[in-house]
Image 1: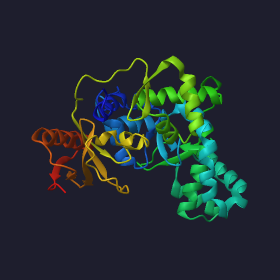
Image 2: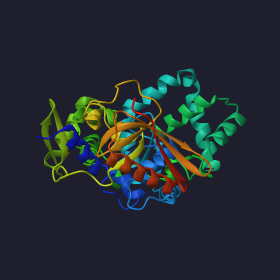
Image 3: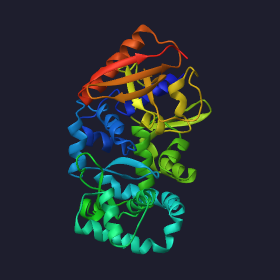
Image 4: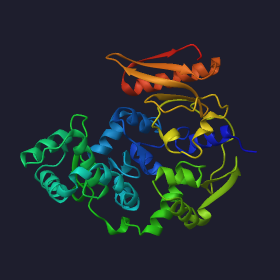
Length: 360
């Protein structure tokens, strides 16, 4: 009989934490979308899933437009492959756009003029930072707060008008979607095709997962999530666990034993946590993690289980990982977490320091 721990281990493989992808581009394409709200920590979320974690790998893919950092699936940032951006946004925008529209109600009367102005600004010069876009709009008589500008640009991304440009000295920039990712009819999907592909790719890259996990992750109605799973047909298989139906790629099977590497230090926005809602807590098979309101903190996973909260502090010469265990750590777990800290530090080019607080 399958257990929560078995499911978590399986997800480590599905998500490439135990079966790394060749590079950042392949990883993003495989996962379909990777949560990217925090650029620094999400860069590690990508890199740690690749065979040779290198900061320049994702940076190069973003610079030349093979990977975009844009709003898709939910009203938040994700890394997405350029080949997938248009059809994914078109599929999920109908339920995401109203979120932006509600927050932008004070600007509703001026939205056509603002849209035209942003397109003109980016047509004149691409790869502009948010501050540069804001200054250019102000020069045209549109004074926006920082929050309004961020929401406006997110809305235009969901309308396939704007996307990420090449980063400028590590800072996010914006470009016109048509210039960055020209429309290609061969990559378009009608709604049923899109639902089927999204369900198959999610259950392959995040599975085993439930229909409610899929609906949450992609901001779909439960009806559409079920339609997608049904349309994927024999490419997906399922089993029952804990009163739920879990879906996975038909050719996938649970791993035989513990994953390698054994431990991971990840942000709480990582796909291992944020990629699910209905069955998120298979990473706590022992039930030791408080189900409190989320904080902007990281996770320490060992063998797919959440054993400690993690706070990362980056200094000039070292990166410090402060762990607050949810239970006593074994000697083997502590050693695995030391190894995880070393990998993360090497990626950042810094010495790594792991500090474990007494058990709460």
